[in-house]
Length: 247
Image (cartoon, rainbow, N blue to C red; front, side, top):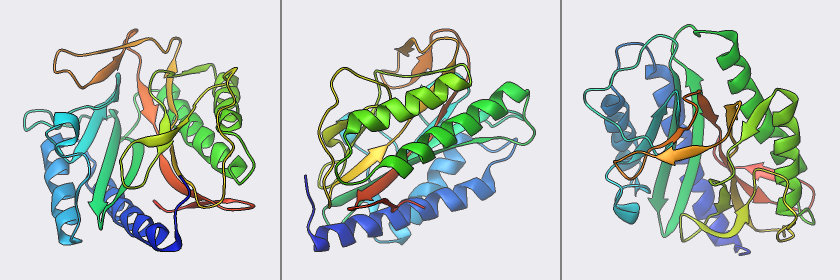
């Protein structure tokens, strides 16, 4: 979908709020903090900006954020009884809804001091995969090209890309056309056009990208128990570049 100037302004405003939430949550990430405290803080910021949480109630989900720790890839649910520990790898996904449009972005961090160099490299590689894809994104490029860029860079570090959870278009719906691959595919997908808005979100794992959903029906974890990292930005496609609206 190609957005109008007015709808792009609404999407940028949502992106600004999402970015603000991530900036504030980053300041709070330390050992001993509960994931529910981060959830409550995110809601307070979102409501304070006259928006509402974009994830809350989405397909029955009960929270404003997805907070995933270590082997959890995505859709981790906040809890009053789960506290951050030194060296945890935390991924936080935040969504907003304002003026008929959505915002969406995810960030990963290491809590305090890392447990090992592997986690540091995993986080760096995931961020680099996202940044390289954004650098290639522009009008005339296929979504398949973005996926190839991500997977090629991930494999340089020995990491695998999660393939059953991918990026997406965003606008009046949280998840909409087009699908945005994180991997090389025989199907190149659509050609990006000026005015399109997409969320690019690589998720990387060591050794194997197989995964499954926990009994809560939401949280996706690695099959091998290895840590995962998740980085996401929402971008507006222009003729010669992609504009990041969630930073």
